[in-house]
Amino acid sequence: MNKKSSLRVVHKHGPCSQLHRQDKANIPTDAEILRQDEARVKSIHLKLARSSGSSNVDQIDATNLPAKDGSVVGSGNYVVTVGLGTPKKDLTLIFDTGSDITWTQCQPCAGSCYQQLDPVFDPSQSSTYSNISCNSTTCNSLTSATGNKPRCSSACVYGIQYGDMSFSIGLFAKETLTLTSSDVFKDFLFGCGQNNQGLFRGAAGLIGLGRDNLSLPSQTALKYKGVFSYCLPSSASSTGFLSFGDTGASKSVKFITLSTVSQRSAFYGIDITGISVGGQKLSIAASVFTAGGAIIDSGTVITRLPPTAYAALSSEFKKQMSQYPMAPASKLLDTCYNFTKYSSVNVPKISFFFSGSVEVPIAAEGIFFVRSISQVCLAFARNDNDTDIGIFGNTQQKTLQVVYDVAGGRLGFATGGCT
Image (tube, rainbow, N blue to C red):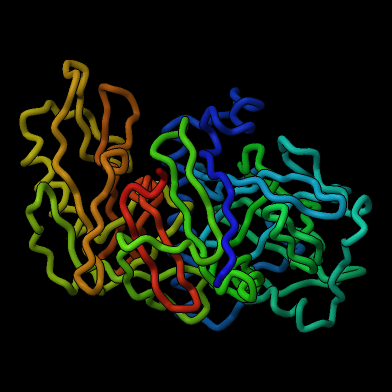
């Protein structure tokens, strides 16, 4: 039987998060969240365009990452707490299915470190820490995980850049990782970041849940068999989970086949085949979804659709919501309503269809992005072109149990997952 280990998931800016309690002044506005989301999506599109076209990986030398105050791991992020080192130190990390390498800020800060809630990890205080040597195959494995060739100082140096400008640079090392008291992993490979910038907003770093050999699911595959699942909470004030190992997936989990987006991609590819609004299947040609393909991403907030598919969704949604007054559009979200005068609203159900005719209903919490009661917007956006990759974002994943069976090449969905 596969072992299972479970961590509590909270929204980074919700009242259940210590980051929120410590850093209320820096909670991003809705406009900032959407701006950062756009930057993340642009970087995903750029990364995939690069990995499908050019074979040149050395775009950014680890030493020359721009030292500007960047964004963007994405602001609609979810965090968990894990232990690192011996004795273990608890760290609050963002988890990200679109990244491979796990890293945390480390002492001493050689460049700059941003403010974080937990004390910054000090490798000199741990009896199990060791650096990775420069010319090892382990050091060279960074190229596929980060998109940058490693550098050498006294030991192996990694560099990873996100979104537009956020980055982490530091020593590539191994250390003991503790997920629960019984799930302890020796020699876990991670980045000990000594120069880190960006709006990580209080989190100590990031857990990479992508498909590369350096990701956490790959490094723990002997125990967990490459299976993990999560449920993102319905609101910032509730909790979800991130579990590793056989979740004993309930019969209600419906599986689809994972697709490969590009050869060098951390991302989990999915095949969207259709959308329905209020039980009405939209007439969108299958070729619209296959032109760019799609991924599921825990760090993108708003689902991105091919313009043709988005137009059909928005049009049908407006038709079924015609009794409610519209509100001004924002730059990213253009189907908005003013609900000031209503105590309750009837919202048409939205479902996504995936390969194998699997229908996944979106929870009520996943349909709108609420900027204020007078501007409640449909939480979907259009890509620039039908050939840009679609992204199934975290707003639409709320309350779903999402099961990643990486070894089995499949992805599962079940409704009501956080209960």
